Length: 262
Image (cartoon, rainbow, N blue to C red):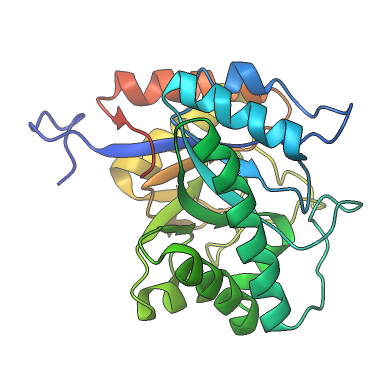
């Protein structure tokens, strides 16, 4: 049994992550510096949906100073659509695109004295790969080809999870603090009403529930199981800094240990 709230000696351990470095050129999306003082791990945009070399280097340097681990947040080649549009790309080409992104970020991470610690998909690729075998395989293959010791963050029960396990890649169960879930345990599409959880206390309470009870209430009122080893707050959610800080405070108050994802 998980420790903490039940009074046992062993506290649950999670990483608290955010999508970060998602500006481009002169444009910024959110308060990256504040978020990097709260989270334990940073999913850094690798240039295909957002981010550029200056931002990637700066983000890695800030993460290193703060003791925050960095993960390669890989995406379809879709700057104009912020990686939120499906791209019908062949598996081999997608694998190469993702491999390119991991290597690019790792170069900047190493320049900052750290290295890429994990891989996760962004946006449409994340959602498509939950069911699409070819695109899930591209995520797994790119990770394996770059460094088979790198874990992949994804939701349990998805094609990404299944194929990663089959390939011997470590899987880390990711759960979402600020996104509504369907009764299937997948994410409610952003365009639908109430897809985002913007109340900081509601988000924090949900995070604690996911960690200790392994469940949450779906958008249609069903209780569904959720495995939460890594908790994500999207940096572009309204009030993201407040949500992240409130979630962190609630987890620590409940006895949860928050650590960098490695």
